[in-house]
Image 1 (cartoon, rainbow, N blue to C red):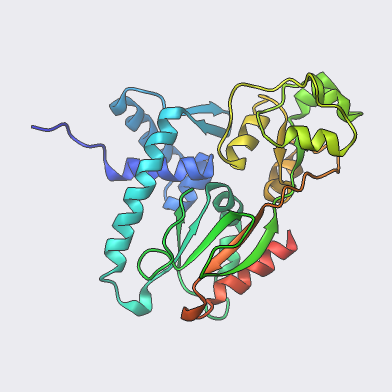
Image 2: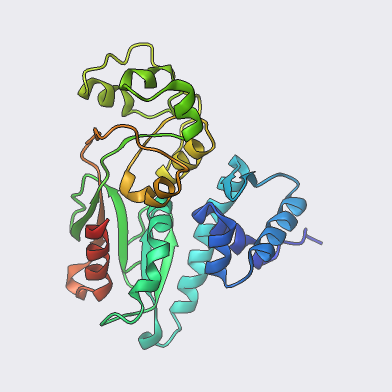
Amino acid sequence: MPPRLPPLDSLRALDACVRHLNFTRAAAELGITQGAVSLRIRNLEREIGQPLFVRYGPQVRPTEVGIRLASNMADILARIRIAVDAVRDPEKRPLLVSTTPTFASFLTPFLAGYRGQAGERPIRLDVTQSMRAIEPGLCDIAIRSGPGGWPGLAQECLLRLNRTPMLSPALARKIGCDHPTNLLRGPLITDRGWETWFRDIGVDPAGMMTGTTEYPTQDLLAQAAVAGEGVALLTPALFKSLLASGALIQPFSHMLDDGMSYFVVYRAVEGRPAFIDWLIALCART
């Protein structure tokens, strides 16, 4: 007899927790309690035999195993949703929005404000780093980062991804932040933009101390910075809650502009969903 698969509810909990990096927000999405989410993750860790998260109080970071499993689960869950939507009443079909993990974390707290808007449709988020084909049944709208220029698709800029150093208050007290040269003492979380940021403000980056871990998303970068791992180059508009709570501080105003932005991408021939106008207005307020 083949080994029993973990319960689908536990795998859905893993997917939500990795996207939100927070058990409470994952529980809100799933419509269950935070305790139920924690129990499902503990049971899944027990069944797999490896830790899936490292916990820092209310904040959590997925382990390498957790990231790998969640990435596969995201694709599988998306396929399940697509299969169900293919036979659903077209008038009840949700708007399929493919987005990156970082933007999903930024967007989720605002989605309640979309309810009741003119032309509102149910929203289904497909959180992935890969580019979904924008066609019926797979993806209606994609939110992607880059310089723009996706051929054959309509696209509008949502948010410039200009970045600046952000770090935990404890690390700021340790290395000092009265001048950018203090940051050279590090540690700086690995990022290809550091040399440009230092040169832009007239500081020689020679001898800067960088870490050994490179993170694929700003969300993971931010959580590493909160945990005190180092200084991260982040887009302040995406992490206003962490700045407001004091979990991170932004000591300098200079921004690194490497030409990257978030865009909403869609097929113009199929009309423009009202969600796009709401999304553009939301990002303009940040």
